[in-house]
Length: 281
Ligand code: L34
Image 1 (tube, rainbow, N blue to C red):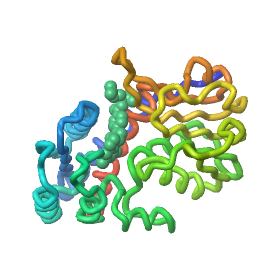
Image 2: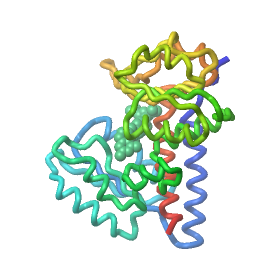
Image 3: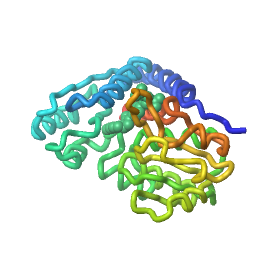
């Protein structure tokens, strides 16, 4: 029988733990963790995610500040805000919601964030740390996925892990984290030849492509753990994962739903990273 991993429940458990630790930090050192979230433009999905981040901060007792800037904001203006936040003693974490408008260099903006406040783990310093095994921060979505896998109780050592998707936010970092846990890792992408033959090898299959329902039953090994990172909005307004859940679930040992799987874990891990940033002081 397949187990459906309840990301909402696990995320709430983690947020409860973070709330406790934040309370202790306030009582012992008088420090309240602070997160600044910067959103440029009006992308509807980004607005939903940013709203959830602010709400989560309130839930765990953090200070949160939102910077909502018009789509035409120029790079220099954004850099100025980041430099100010780097120096702001009340702010421990800085997050610039992606994607940014095309006229702004994402690379330049991320590089401007103080690596000690880089709670997304996107700064080259932290990416390098992830490669060699000791980053200050691990990106939120991959960190959330590792937490979900850990809670299945499955030891990754020697297992075949297949990641579909090679983004900087999910595909590449999750591959490195699985590797650090001694899995044999394969990364697939749009140019991979005969994708089903590769994904069928997976004991752990991570789908992070952004294409609704692309992972079908014939691409999944019996008893696999299937983690669905996709958040695709369909024309009818509903959310769909990258995995065809109805087809794939009967074959899997564990599977994450969309919504209610990886998404809420991203937010919970952002709270954890921000707490870690404040604890590091
Ligand atoms: N800088 N940009 C930066 N950091 C991030 O970590 C993100 N990401 C991704 C997009 N851009 C980013 C997010 O926050 C994706 N992402 C994210 C966050 C939350 C959820 C999904 C993606 C989420 O809460 N998903 C819910 C459904 C939400 C809905 O109704 O739309 C879920 O249950 O999956």
